[in-house]
Length: 530
Image (cartoon, rainbow, N blue to C red):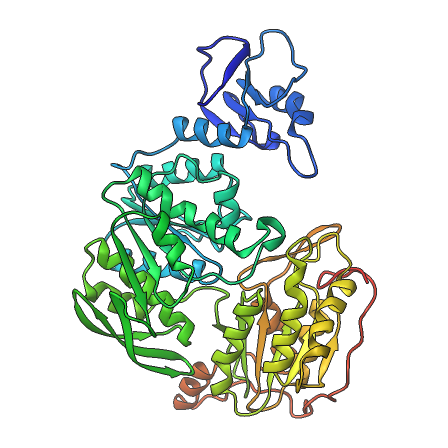
């Protein structure tokens, strides 16, 4: 612990846990009072002590009863990680740790790596934006961040090791690297997906953003002599990762020379097939996750697992069954048009998903999206331009507006949509996400494709007054049911073979009037305030 000093109390006080959240303190926990953007945690020291905290870690003076253990440190974030690693941290001998970083594709790549390891018979843990699993078959538990705070992260990793996992694969965000959430983690493999503009309000510039991502590779170089890195040969930022990374680097790509490549790529509406070429041999891959972008994710997963000694057969087996909630997730209720839910929330990701579904769209491509409050506002106009340039019908709505005015966010998006030369004129706004989604479904005709973008797997919407329950996939099914579609096409076909009559949409339910929707004031579960 660098420059830590005991201000008062007993140096040998027993500590059983570490947390930065006073509401979650249990008896024997060390409470680390981190000063945040909105709240200084020193205000909650009394609450933590009342709950049985064994001591307090702080950067500055704190008012506590005599005899309370108080440890002064120059950085509470570093201290949180160091104490958590000491209390919880599984050793590298117990748990091999793989970190995945990049702008887009982290979640999908993390799930793919985990699926390949499981297909190989290796019990593995996974930490991603979707949640945590310890390889025990239980549903993923969510925690709100791409990468949890250091205390939670080390506790979760220890839980995986205790559950019998030999490997853990985790998303590692640039915020986590910059804010020392992964400090003390002995990563043995660092994986890089790509780098496109995001979080520049936090990092300041693309070079600084790349440097933050490269910290993961530096951690492998410093702590794991036998570790290796995995980089995207088709992304220029990989040069930065190589510069800071370990000696052993495996590359993957489609366009440029690489150790692991995909050739003969064939994209279909419900699957993608390609030939995986590697130093370990070639393998035909059939992925049930569609889209060329997901070929890159599979290549990253393949390079990672092959580098660990996993055979090609495990990659083939995993690709045939692996899906990820909220990532090009198809909503099939028997309707004569396609509906996809995707987490795309950056200009690059939105463009990628729209280009992915365009070839399978026989009629109009329709997209619904917004932008989160308190995030990189510079991405809003570009997202509007992308949507207006690539889709035929655009519905701008609320994402997670938080304390920002969702109508003002929508107006920033519309600036880009209006300026896109040659773009569609069919751009509407409704900041109530439920109303906007239902309006889009009501307009859909046979052969259309609807993309519900931005929220993906999320099961909440963050409004000014707090979080409310929300899930795009569930809401899409309700909207489709309102038009009479409740039975997936596969079930309808099976019912037909058995002589049953599948439920169809109401005969009176024709295509809705293609009228514009204007911004809707007021707060509702699907939106925010205008």
